[in-house]
Each structure stands twice: as C-alpha cells, then as structure tokens.
Length: 140
Image 1 (cartoon, rainbow, N blue to C red):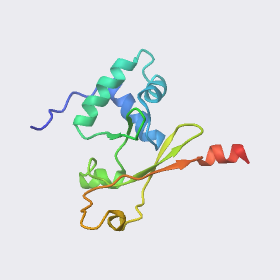
Image 2 (cartoon, rainbow, N blue to C red):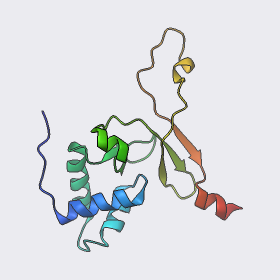
Image 3 (cartoon, rainbow, N blue to C red):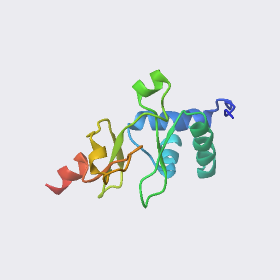
Image 4 (tube, rainbow, N blue to C red):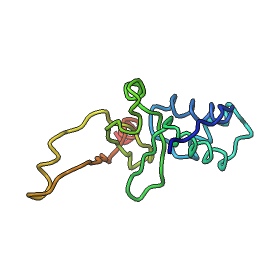
C-alpha cells in the first residue's frame, strides 16, 4: 500500500530545508533547533510527526546507528533524481566528540569475503567512528 502524500505545510518545509541545508544526518532535536529559525512556534512532537510523514513519502532517509536514536537526512541528490532515495547505498561517519553523523558516499566493496564460507551477504552497513574535521582541529 502506497502512502498518500500529505499537504505541504510551513512546518514540513522547514523540516525539509533544515535537513537539506545541513548536509548531514540530524537528530529530531537538531532539526527542531534549525527549523525554529523559520517557524518559531514549532515543537518537537510536530517535528516527529513531520518526519514520520516525510519518511513514508520517501522525502527523508532514516539513519539508524547501533545504540543511537534514529536520525534523519535528506536523500542524496543523485539518488533523488533516480527515485531511489530509500535504496541509495552509502555509509556514515559518527564523530565521537560532537556526536554528529556525516554521510560517506563511498563503499569499500568486497564485504562478501568477510562472511563465513557458505554465507550470502544480502546487505551491509558501515559506520566509521572518530573525530570529524572540526573536532580533530580542536584537538591539535
């Protein structure tokens, strides 16, 4: 069953713009902070409601990292052009200092060789962890 598109609202536009302009995965609280610049009365429950609808409409991508609450990101521009926002394969870098998550648009490939003999890899997720460029500069 396909999700029915919901109407475009100021709140939804603000959420989408916050994600698109950030260039990275955002927690709902980060989206709220950014989107309030456009819609000062926005609250967290509205952000969650908008994210749920946008995810169902394939306008945002949900990013789940082990041990972390879900984050969201705008679909990659080349994935959007092909209509494959939810199928677009990329990985993430999680900064252990500032807790931000950035997309990595590369894949090492050959992951299949890591699986035990006779196993078939159907999908994989890779998360690199360390210091982002801003945090690495601050540590130097």
